[in-house]
Image (tube, rainbow, N blue to C red):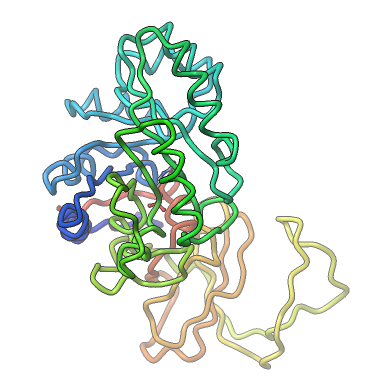
Length: 346
Ligand SMILES: *Cc1c(COP(=O)(O)O)cnc(C)c1O
């Protein structure tokens, strides 16, 4: 049945092994991030077998899924836990990323000997206490803890503001770590590999939280394929339900599409257009890279995606399958769509 995604676990395992090797050589532990694949136990095992020290996820449901499958972790929750989730986490999670005194204190009350990593915002403007206020806030929280301990400080760039790691923002986290005497400096995600490769990562940094690089071999923030890793780990297969030659620009006045966007089309005359049975509910069309040379994804609505196949050399017919590589956002949506079958190649 289609659509389905084919996930090549052997490629992911090799990526993870390579990353662990590169990181360990520089004294850095790898934290394997499972959230993109919803805490899939096969992936968790592959991370651990390749030498990742900790498994991390943003959702307690995914961590519980791994635990139920017999995976012992240790686990890190990498989204600041909502207060209402702490009861679900306390039996399952060893490491907690925090950024609010209230959250740290509640974990301290409810969880025995929790290990906290206090998040510091070095400029990306997602989670974390601003770096210039961090030492003071962290010291204050430390003094109030009874059972939990702040074992480290952490930071995240790339994911929200698209901020790249720089000498300056790396120095910021190292300075906070020194000021509060933190043993662990945890950075993520994948975009920090560029600092490692350029030799710009301060030697004090000893933990890296990695998902995308292992899972897709790419770095969306740095806009690159990582040359020493494998791509094409995740392939979407979708079936053609209509194949017709039509004009490339719609006829009539243009309003907004089903997603509330104003679509813009380039006039290329009449083109051979395939409709595949997968849409915005299953994938992000901007993140599909056709494996057929010459094919071009044009646009999607909820359940349909139009692909210009005029230049494709092989003969196509209704019922044939088009294949695509997927970027982070397309993979994320397909993984969480119940309509996309998942096939794991071990
Ligand atoms: C998602 C996430 C990561 C992993 O990021 P990738 O870019 O997928 O490697 C690391 N840390 C935190 C806090 C995250 O939310």
